[in-house]
Length: 232
Image (tube, rainbow, N blue to C red):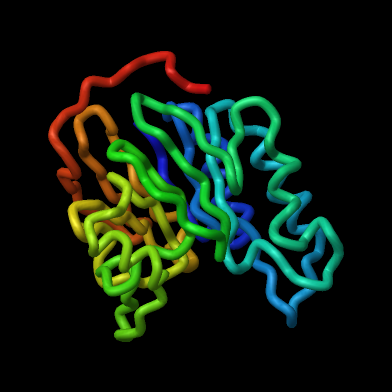
């Protein structure tokens, strides 16, 4: 079982929850906006604060950068989310990394990076969901998705599964696009815990938990034969 969380925006309560919950999962996937940077707000040591929580996780961790994880002109550490590389000790994967887990190839794709050509059994971590999907369209009607990713998936050239965030209030938390699936847990506002997905790769089931209550379970694919001990 893997845990998918996103857009924690340096919320210490949510990172504290994650540090406690992570041991229940075989993999934790974080899809961007771990920090809460913008040109009008001092970073106040945000990278160090988040890294201290990430180092407490005992479970393998995959993370990618989002639009609030870097700041141009603020020094090399904050350029292109270079601070994330400081977390990459042992079983931690970040922008540009790929690894095997449960018979599937996971790719960590950087914010605004180039998209690779996927194989048939891949899972991508990508901050922005595919455009024109329920996971990318906000309840206000705006589409904040990635156009290139959306086009690739609609043409049937997407990975098996894309884990994303970015859009805080998507009209759907899970959507099928061109034979691929897109998951976006959404943003939990002032709740004590974040929204999250629990994904059983073997059974092909994703269960969404909403901090405000409720959630839904989605069948992604038919059960897979899971290959154990294949993590790199």
